[in-house]
Length: 150
Image (cartoon, rainbow, N blue to C red):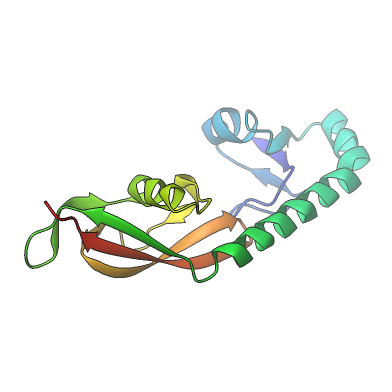
C-alpha cells in the first residue's frame, strides 16, 4: 500500500514522502489518525496544495514540543511503591504509574510519551527515563522510586 505522509514518522519517512507500508498499518493506524493519504493522483495534487500549511503545522508542533521539553528538563518524578527491605519492588513501575505520579506533582506528561528503554522499573532508587514529546524532541527525566511506608 502506497501512502503520502502528512507528518514525520520515525523509522518510516518525512512529511511528503511516498512510502510503501503493509495494508494493515496503513488502514488501521496511518489513515484513521490523519497521518497519511493514499498515494493517488488526486491526493498528490491535494497534498501539493496543502503542503505549505502542513509544513507550518509540523514546525509549530516541534516548537511546542521543545517548549515542553524545556519545562521538563531536570524534572524529578517521585513514585512511592511497596518494596522489600532490599529495595526490590513487589511488582514494577511502568509508564502508567509514572504518569500518575507526574500528574500528582503537577508535571504534564502522558504515558504514551514515556519510554522505558530497559523495561519496567523493578528496584527502588533513581532511574533515568526518556520522554519522547515529538518524533524529533526527547528529554530525559529522573524517576525516583521510593519504598512506601506500610
